[in-house]
Image 1 (spheres, one colour):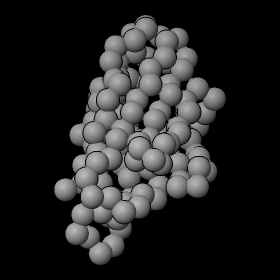
Image 2: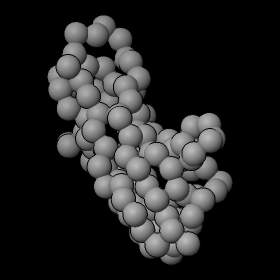
Image 3: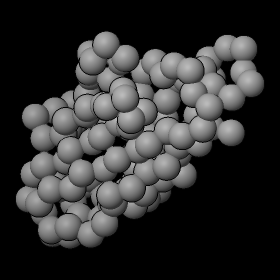
Image 4: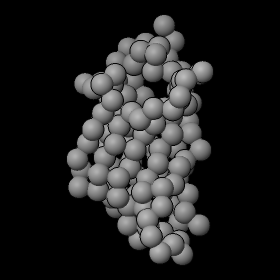
Length: 121
C-alpha cells in the first residue's frame, strides 16, 4: 500500500525557517509531479509549490523568493524549505504526489496526512 508521510512542522518565530519533508513509501513504480499545499484556519486549501519529475518548479506568488521545493527521486521524497516565515504562513501543510504504485494500472494522486506549521509574530 502506498502512503505519503509528512514531517518537519512545528512552531517558529516570524523570520525563522522550517524544512518540511514528505516521503512516499510502498510499492512505487514512478512518481510524476509532487506538490505542497497548505490550509490556513478558516480558509481553503491552496497550492504552495510543485515540482515535476524533471525538476521544474512553480510557486504561489505569496511564497516566491522565500520557499524552495526540491525532491530526491532515489528516496521518493519531496522537501519544502521555508525561510523568512510570516504569521500568514501558519496552517496545515499537505503533500501530494501523482504516482503509479501498488496494484494500480494508472497514475493516481495520493495525499499525506498533513503537518502543522505555526509562525508566531
